[in-house]
Length: 482
Image (tube, rainbow, N blue to C red):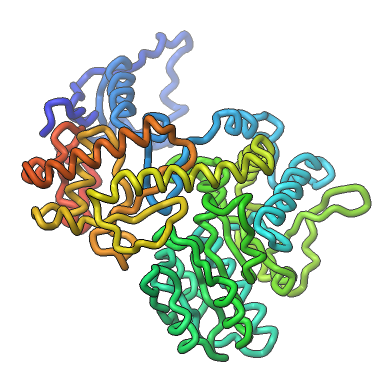
């Protein structure tokens, strides 16, 4: 065990310690008042600690956490970028915080205007016709997109049987299609890492409901033939769903709606400056073209007769997909982000994200293998093929990065790259921080050749040493026992 590892709060407990004291009662004690009420006298093994021990224990624990406020967080496909604190401040305005979802629309016109304005801006950024903010996260956004496609095809009289998903798509896409009752067929990538149009043509027929395409795909490569793919699907009566989780590379530069996309989900908690992961909640708004608009979830925010209102009069709607109208405060943060940057700033953010990723790619291409040589956008996927010659794998590289005070990139995804190291620096990292990452990766490559054992036993300088991750998944110990 690391000598610096914090003990469990149970382990620093001593019988009789307490973090508070009550004053002596100044009224007579009346046992009769509590005779019929079961009172818990003691909680078995409950920790007994002082106030100062509690405060120091949890403060030390908090300081072991790596977060985006500490340094670069290059998780590919996740867009872990720094979020301006002013956007958090705006979302904390008391008028927003205290608004109840069941307020009469006439009493929360400002909130509805925010939702309406955000929809208008996202439709402009994506080239879609309308949006819903109900989906609570990206995976639910995917599901809603497929529900809309199914509802549209059912109205036409045939929901169809299959959904085509490229092998370079995001991993949750097959689940979203399956939940909506579809069978999935995988479409291969070509040598450039994009959708193989010949394989798509072979599989596309009138039994196919849709294609779910991620663009840029999980290799960070732009699907340059997406319009041809869309036309191929449309020619057979199918629809095109685009996973927009990688919009960080496209916003302000090009629009999915101009590529033949019928429905898209976005991740506000990735692209538009709201906390990701444990900092949530997230938001996965779904945008659609006119062909799908009448099926969007209700209620929808509309402007009529000089007022904003919540309209449920859409008989073809798939209904509600969230208890209320999505995660409102996340939308507030996203709108603050869009307004603060403006059109030029939105475009620059994408361009710098692409620049930063390509700086890392160019800096490390001699040390780390690139399976696909095509140009990449906001992320690039190396592999451990070179280091494997010295019996060093991507997990060893990731663990060693922890010693060097750099968060590891995503590993072992996408599956089409064996030993993947999927790296996305985002636009918020400075050249100095990019250089720290590059320097660490080059040091690890040198160690793989000269001293591989230091990698295979890493991390050495972390709060917790290397865990048996398989055992942790199969035999989780989630409760302390004395």
